[in-house]
Image (spheres, rainbow, N blue to C red):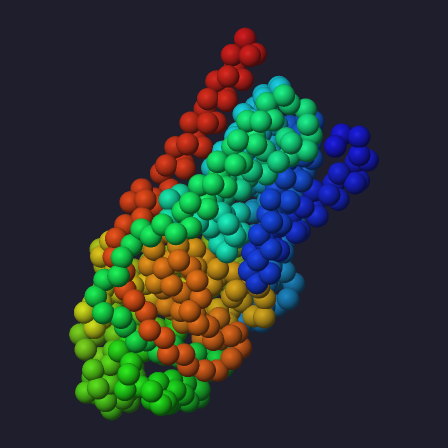
Length: 497
């Protein structure tokens, strides 16, 4: 690649990043991830450390510039931030994200081994995954559009119960590096690469029909309610009564007698639960009499603290408080830098407290239901705390903040990955879509489309058991990546002495 003109190399690096989001939902062209990462790997083969960092930065600019552009809509259209400020904050966020691929490329160029293509591919995959793990932890974490999500419906997705999404990222980047080595044809150990690729493919195919969980208890009939209330109207006082009427009316639509559980989305009740208890008492009493549980998102206040929560409206009135808050939407990230901007952004309930204490499922109809709210289902490592007790997962979200972007579909894709990692069915209900019922293998049982008003009745089978990923989390892939890097670094040091 060194023979290419500089402008062409730069353009290819940016384009490689631009096409990577095509591997995620809604397009889900999973081979694009291999092509994108492989092209970046080819471009940095004979570069200096500084040049590799620049190409990695250009790659990240395309990758995150497209991948997280929805932040602008959240701030401008629904957060009331003026367009220039929303654009500036989005740009700052994207620039922070570009640091990760830039540093990955620089570190690889610094410690790559001469005439060791197989080792170099392993090094690149290890550095890349360590950077993703860091991105998932730093500043409360932002593990959006990890490379591993590109394989949610691809052949490598069968590895999810074993190694999780970060492990799949490792495999994708490793395969990209191995394929790049075959394209370059510079190494005599090409059969090693072929053997490694064949082993990965066989393992993935072999896992296709392996089940890591088993049915538990009786099936549950669940009604998903998506009222499709526009975000700009959601927190309007005059619309509160209309919203409650709409949700209760849709809940009572024909077929309710067969239902065990009704799920409303995040902040379906766009105020404090205690503020609407009296007006909702007749509805709640009728549901209790029919033996039907209703889970709804709303806000719970406790002294001066306000929580984004999910509450069982009747019965024991069990409550789950959201633990992992959304940057910009529920708290201001980088507050020491961006606090000045808070006065120009008007996002209702955007300074919330985080729940704490034991992470326990809710007992609903005799089924242990592991609840998460919105962004929380992006953190598989944290959701592991709900297992093995939880036999059914429920996520409620308000993806209206994303506008008409790819983000609602990408969010559903992450929920599908959680189902595959934990071998659990997952019900996700959002305000404006996409709402869906997902089986324990990540397959869609039914879906209410984006920007659609409707209900969906589905029967789900709770399941028990622990996958290897649920047992061990990200530790195995973290240690493999770390030890691989340490080994290469030590070998690099020996070569220089």
